[in-house]
Amino acid sequence: MAKKRTKADRLQRQTEQQEQKVDHRPEKIEKKPSTLAPNLGEPTIPIPIEQQIQKRAYELYEQRGRTDGHELEDWLRAEGEIKRTNAAAA
Image 1: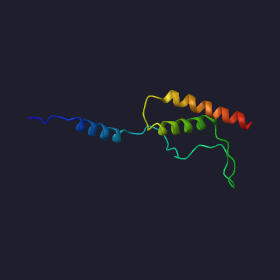
Image 2: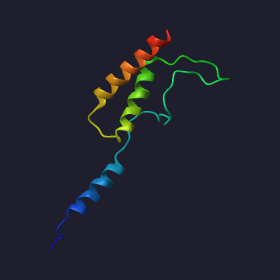
Image 3: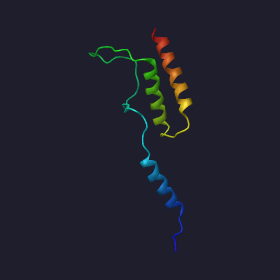
Image 4: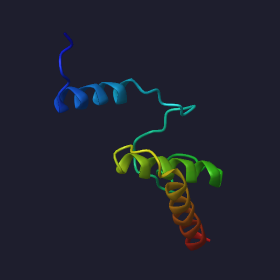
């Protein structure tokens, strides 16, 4: 006879499934705070705004604990932050 599954068993299985999910991002993004200020001694290389937004949106995703379903919200928030920062720097 089959063993009855408990809530703990289901939670364990869900945790294992989450760990097995594949990250579909094409490249790894460094886990450091985004900044537009150049480091001293390094040449300044302009980063396209879309890449800046993508990086910031991913940081927001990680801050929320990598919960899915908020992609558009993260992108729009990141876009607003980056555009405000660029406007202030200009």
